[in-house]
Image (cartoon, rainbow, N blue to C red; front, side, top):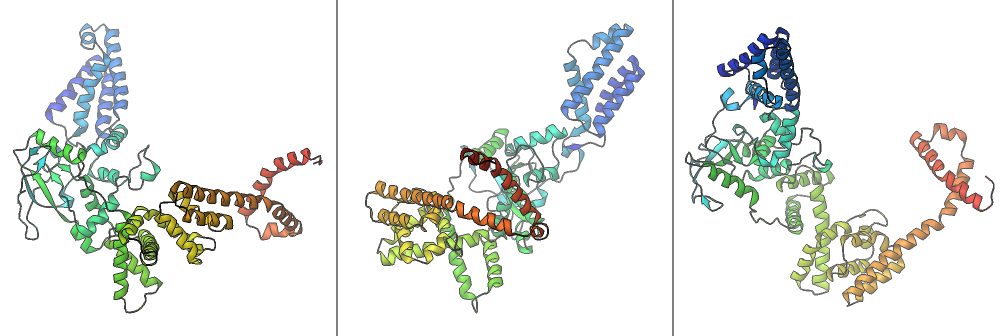
Length: 517
């Protein structure tokens, strides 16, 4: 919907009737009516604002007529003011808004030939909700397709926009909503950057093109494919994509209903594509990661020498873009580390333990996310990966526990950071490895974690006295000027807050022990 810059003759006459009636009652009131109507045309009010202002005007008209004893006018204004206001609002809306196609010459989108492919009927005829609906196919320029501002996916967002602005969004504003660039209250923080996941879709389209044709009505209205079209807009206007990727998003194959389509046909298309699952099952992360890993190994073999850090970063970015993961190589790095551990896990069980290769691979697939925890702390002393890489026996213990389903959840794998560095806990892990009864083995693992946590807490408590003694001694010896010249203000602030925190607690304990403070 857009603001009109002209007023048709019938609307002009409707407004003049209201203004003439106001003039007949009172010149001052007439000017006020005219001012509000003009304000509504030039600077649209929200429905609530319109209702409040017009209610006031009608009330003034009724009061003026009654005061003058104008029976005819009073009678014409009798009844519910709300009903009268609604009639005036309808006139205002006709002035303020009108469909885009009535105010601008919107170019009708028709499929055309592209890259040697000519428009033609879609065969076999597509079926939606048991209805065979004839369609034609062909290519259109993605930027010629306007997003559908009646898409139910956007129902809440459009309602918010209309409430705030008293009108429908224009095409640019609709894109801002799709790209999560428009501030709308109530949207979860983790959804504010890309609520409709347009960027992820855009990266897929940049690599593969639009694989599922959007569907247009006979007049070019977009019935299905808002996200795909928005993603093409994003590609065309983002520096993230090169010229070849932008070309893939320039012309897209669409399906279009014929002139014989009915409202039932349109409804069947919308409902079928949004309520019925296409039964597509995404690849598990294990499979995706293996594909990325294999491609990475192939890239390394083509390098004339072992690539340095900068060259590896370039290669990983290329790899990430190839798999539609975007320019950030975080996912690629995570996949490569995880598969390195999976390869180690599979080689140990298949080659050393002589386990069935496919049983091992199924376990690696099932517990793939556990390997993400095993990669943590690779270069840090005490980290899981660092500790396991120092001791193959300990690593194989963990691998055996994984294969035999003895970890009950990923949090237990995460807790290995404390468990592996505690001798008693390691002994309990070894007992769990050798235990054939699954329930008992799982109890051993939980006991190992509990033991490590308790001893860690005890060590911290036992060390408190010596730490405080050392700190007090340091505090007494540090020169006063160090506080002024060497210690950062934020650290001084932290010290002050810590002292304030412990002061009442220390005083209470000292009083209990008979020490005067």
